[in-house]
Image (cartoon, rainbow, N blue to C red; front, top):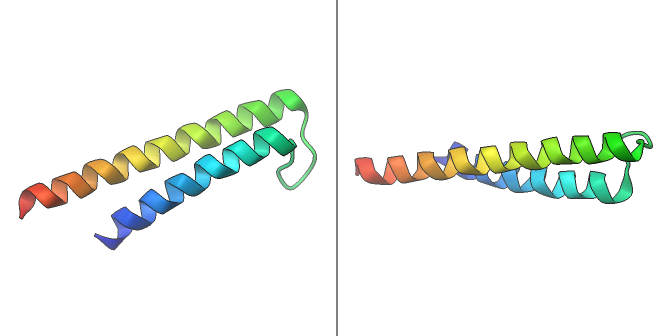
Amino acid sequence: MMFNWLSLITGLFYIVLGIVVMLYKFFFTVLEPGIAYALGTLLILYGIFRIYRAVTRIKDAGDER
């Protein structure tokens, strides 16, 4: 159960990281704008996927009780 909540927090972290990469165009090194937007978009999408997976697992765990 704790993994699901940690996965939810990690998903939020990835979304924030994607936004920061898009705004500052920096990820361990200075990025070209196109690469920064592509990487930021991928990070945001992965964060949304992690949140979706965590929410479905939390709901499934609640249904089993």
